Length: 173
Image (cartoon, rainbow, N blue to C red; front, side, top):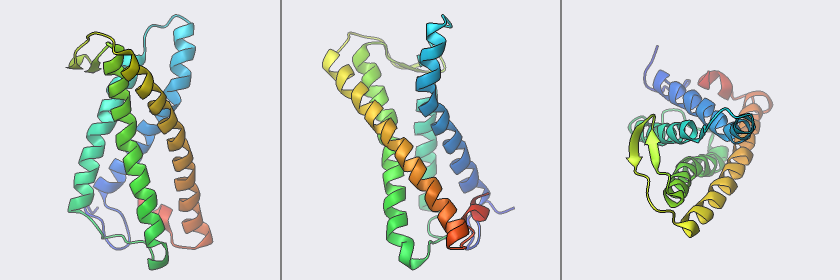
């Protein structure tokens, strides 16, 4: 089993980062719905879990970008798709950065702070209403945009697998 990517297959680290981040992103995006439903049932404040997992996603993103820089260019898309692949991945990476950052700024503005599984990262403080409102809205819009990007990413992966016959899913599985 290769840790590094080869010309024909992504390595163990790249695959583990890709799939763990995919699961985490989907969980965080879906948590908007189930947190509200559970809070209505009196199950307590679940936003702390959402914040902690958002911080974990940010840490994984930094590690993934460092890994990509170290392990870059081994699996290259076909030349005619290279620009689209780069732009699509750049958009995904920007969203993976902007969504947690906007969430942190919204939490800061709310005065509730941010903790990572109980470890305070940003202490509670005074509410900054304009900051909270601006970044809550930004956070929501970016999350909706992420749903669209995920859909495009999945469609592209299936198109490369079955329509173009490039076996991309096998390389990432």
